[in-house]
Length: 544
Image (cartoon, rainbow, N blue to C red; front, side, top):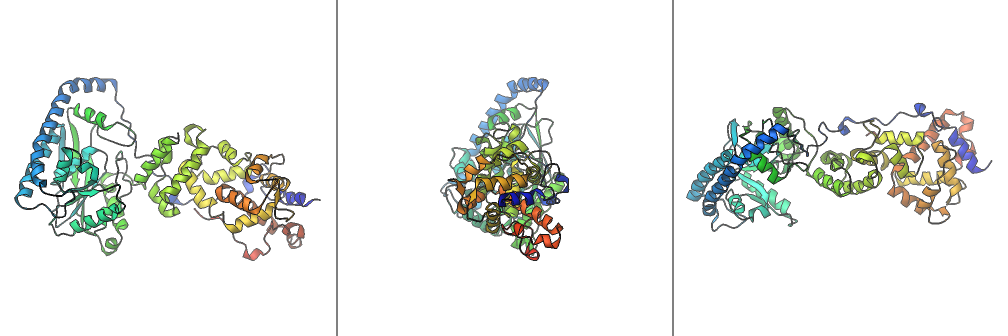
């Protein structure tokens, strides 16, 4: 019997190696609750359904209300501009000292009145709950959920605190002057030191003892549909000072304010809102939250506690989505995938799996190459098999099931990223690659021929008529595969590592079940199929 045939015979006798024996395979890798899908799959989409009767009502009201309200808003902005100019005259764009004295008193009073008048002219009915804390009680306000540009009403109600804004906004005509009047903390997207400078500026103002105005921050960093609270960025919590949470609610039958990544545009929302008879908004000031010693040293912990309190008061869940998920959504759309395919709860994935945005983005390219031909942008067992250039077999189904965390028969991008990081990359070590190469190199000449490659794969997958020529040609640069070629391919395609290790584990289980004199048979150990020292063997499986 040839050595290829011997290896095939050993593989074929492994429990579960043949078709139809999946039920006696080793148990699946257990799931961690921390990797369960989020309670809200996509907080960045809003699809407002408007019925025919409502459309007629909007049209009729819009004929009268839209021009009147647009005119009033424009008039109020023009009236506010001189006061903003007085407040900012002779002041640099990035202010280094707070505006004080009569200029601050007069302009703040006038701008607060005009701000309330502007929102009233838009049709907003504002209900305020709770008490606004003084600058000494809470130097920082944190408002959530952030769902629309109309959330600026919180700034008016809170007494015109400073806000964190992009530098480009301060340069816009008219609006830029009004923004500078509240002495904002400006962020530059082109300055590599902008993040550090912004944090330093927030710390300086928050610890000024009331010399600077209070700071209002929307810690989510992007707009959502208010169905949950996504990850709070730690910037507002880094100073380690007391913060006052502000809750925003829009209890209207028709939602005309939510401005998300998928939904109505800025102009459409303005027109829809202006055409409503009125729009309700509730602004609730919660009790001031004072950080303990541990939270002062860990702003992420402080942010998490405040977020949980706000979510509990709102009666909504929390998720680990963040702005980076929005960037991945855009990338998914550019790759002809459904935009929601890019959502992975980036905060959780990056922290637990040690992945940065660039790494996740590369995985998205790989995922798109597999799923682009499937419906709904998800990978089925057929696409999975086609990508691996392997037939649908019991071993492949088991590997697919490890990726398919919610057992719905398909793999989404989030499951794909977790599977690669938790199942495949830990198995794709130098040692495992060496063992896998020796497994295929039956005659131990340092090269894998197509016959050797085909024999082991046919036996391990339980498919005797398997054609592996396509996969072999993808790895080999000639008529055989060297170790370097094998290693390069394995590192680029970690999915195969789990197939290799599963096969090795199954063989180990089989060898242990044999009599001792059979376990030490040279025909089994000569090509390193089974471990030489059983007491030193360890499983590469990692609980995920």
